[in-house]
Length: 330
Ligand code: UT7
Image 1 (cartoon, rainbow, N blue to C red):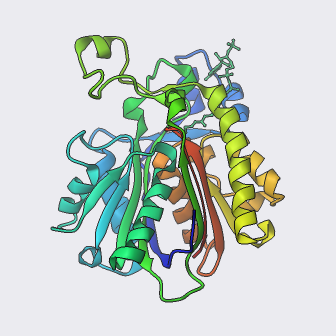
Image 2 (cartoon, rainbow, N blue to C red):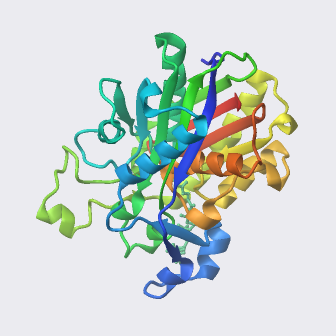
């Protein structure tokens, strides 16, 4: 199922919009409260993209910061992957817009639609093509403008989601210790309606009716997802450790998708790790879907909590349903 892939994270970057929506913002017009939101989700606040911001503008900022951190130029890239469920346009992909924005031509560019696990799906795809196709540097971006597909009258979802972008330059590694040691990607499409958008695609094209009925907004069965996420993440962690022989205590940081602090805490406790080894930003940014994992990774590297040689676990579960786990040495 998985063999080591000879790649390293050469640089990371992120972008977070300025506008902060606190829990009190929602409490001012909806039947909700900080007392309900914070203990149930771990979220204090989240960000909302401004009028002139979009998945592309945030991807570009995050991507340029990742390139600067990696010490390479855009022209050194061999491919661009953008993971998103909120693309700039339905056609073409956000990655193609981004390629043009970065002044590039010819190199392959495509989007991955795997929701919360999209960045890691992109990372493994990039690593596999570096391994098999001779590429040296791939830009992988996870970017979402979730506030644009969120129903601000639905208290069960609107309090959860925020906007952001995170990016990584994934490069060929000549140092055998710096690699993806293990990866496991999966999906269960039969449970797709646990989190989905009913209209706006080919089945239900946008119309006055779909808009009037709010079918272009995200729908979620929160408590079913919660239970499935806890169970699957436990399973993924156990399998990854057993398959590699890695001891949980040798991992410097576990970076889970930021869907709910209680889900993340369950995985941490399962591994017997101290609180400081769990990468968390849900308190400040909410659930940013494909952006959440690269955002935490970038922040941890910038703060010096992660550095070259550290062993990191990336872990996620969400829309699709999809799931991922990777163990990588930075
Ligand atoms: O990234 C995509 C993957 N997403 C996830 O993995 C999300 C996983 N799920 C969750 O994080 C949790 O299920 C939620 C935080 C979304 C919800 O927490 P919960 O404890 O599962 O609540 P619930 O959906 O079972 O609802 C319990 C009650 C309901 O009221 P009644 O029917 O018991 O009267 C809801 O209407 O809480 C009510 N409720 C709220 N009350 C105040 C739901 N949302 C809110 C709210 N404020 N914002």
